Image (cartoon, rainbow, N blue to C red):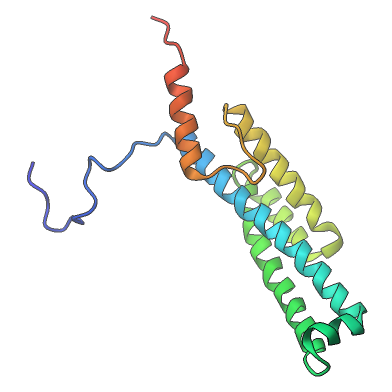
Length: 164
């Protein structure tokens, strides 16, 4: 078959892999779960650092000097706002895999309230772990990578018995 001049030379039809809609959903769940888990850790770490820098002037001066300590503490506070917006997007993306749009928007909007923002993240991560385990995948501590999903799906398909 003759290739089209408009087709990319690096991508051919033989290179494309057929992914079922269920497997594509699992890939989205795993990638969104990894992002949410990473954002959860970064938010907790930056919140603890910002509180430590605000509450301890001696620590602030020892690390950054007298003139820069308070400005760096404000930078950590700005980082928290950025991470909050990223968490809103990640919570919405992961909750859309399990829930309709209105509850997903509500879960994403809970990220605006810091005392209540971590509970939906923990719940969504746990729901994603459960969904991956229900499909026979074994997620690690930080979820699954795309290559491990493909290898586990291939192993699962090869071990399934076909009844004729």
